[in-house]
Length: 487
Image (tube, rainbow, N blue to C red; front, side, top):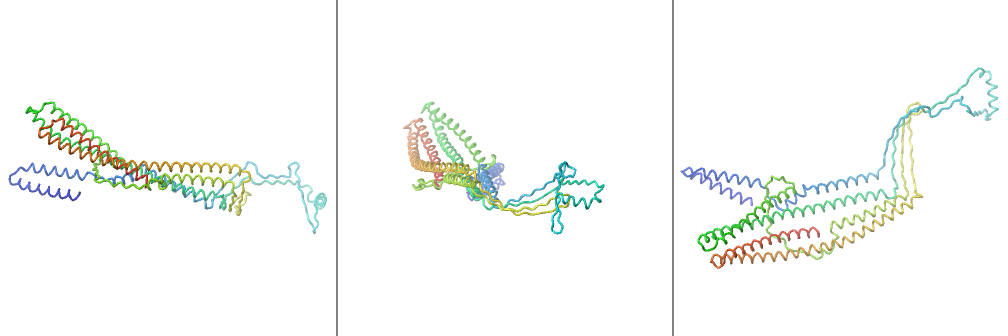
């Protein structure tokens, strides 16, 4: 295509230069300059247009469609969920710090308190002395020392302090909840990726529908333009015949009215093409002011349908989602059952504190934690049974929808077969209508039929051409839908 345009441009420029040489010899130069300017404008217009094939439109739609971008973000979010679940395998580490200041000391012991009792025990040469005897002994020995001495003892502690520490916990047994939680997170990634593929398939199919809609309107426009060319010739002939009195003005009026009808239909098709092109450009991510040229496919893919393709549904992405739903309910049941299983963890803690008014001092502790739920097993068992019901429901839905998908695929195959056979019928109808038009035109030129017969034959030919275009697009869309359901 590009080489042909380049050759045409080269030849046209050469011809223009030759014309300018002739102009220098006395021929009109302004006409040649105008032609050169028109050629340059035409060349720039072709360069500004963007030629789009069906594959290029699909690729652009998959890059720019919001639904595809959001599906990619769903996959990314599922991967973050998987990473978060994987961290449960590692120890949990926490740090804490604090400071307190009480209005009264937490420990306050005073000898002046009413009812206070102090027990004193002494030992001398292996003999313990306590009680009244020790008190009497002390008083006898220290009577002179204690005479005139007022003894008042006050002990006040813990009125303010600070502390800081760090603790690490490593789970050893968690009832399978960590393992099953990670499996569930991985299943979420698989589901998100499957949904992404389904979204891409849907975007591809929508792109084909919009692309073929433009082709449909363009082909109908060609049919109308072809009919208008024939009507222009017919109108000139009819006008001459009416002026010569060979036919009535009524016959000429029929031709002119048919011309106006086709011009109105052409205007509607132009608007329709413009709107469908804007819709396609918006869908694939092009600006509205971008000029595009749609390549029309010249061949139709052969009809190849194998019964084995639509008698099974296991390869369908929808079926994969149903299987994932069953697996998810099964994993949720295992996680619910893990609530009643033993829990074992080991840990260590180390902290600094200053609560006695001295400098900070530290201490560390190693510990193990084991727990076994004794009374929650009944509740856990009921939750597990509820998840089993949900799993069975998911199994039932999977089997029911599997049968429906097989029917859907069978129906899609039948529609492709029907559309293919109808396509052959439409092609035969166009051939017959074209043959009829040529015969009627020959009869009209020979004066054997009137204008009305010629107009009727032309209308039939145009209608069969439109039906053929409709059927060709219908077949292509049916085939695309069938391939989407069976791949």
